[in-house]
Image 1 (cartoon, helix red, strand yellow):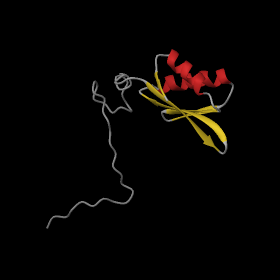
Image 2 (cartoon, one colour):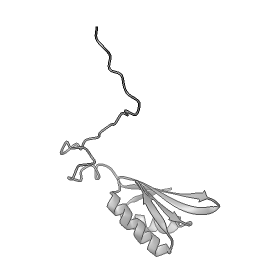
Image 3 (cartoon, helix red, strand yellow):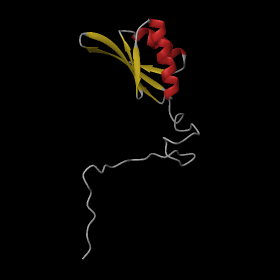
Image 4 (cartoon, one colour):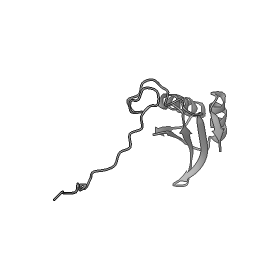
Length: 112
């Protein structure tokens, strides 16, 4: 009698995306083709948190190092704090217009 395999608690499914050029997982890929596979897009929106404004910049196709550099430049230009979380940058205050100018000048498609 054959036993069926049972999943144990805590065992999760993981999807590993591989690079189309080198075949390695995207997290280990060094060829850079996964980053340049599509257009660079940033979506700008304003959120209210505890009564204060926060400019959120959701990105798609923008390399992490580029996002960190642009977020640092934006924070210095507007004189406020902020952070980069994953593929999004959060800047304290309403700075949508300055962010549009900065990301547009870098050749990134700005939406929102």
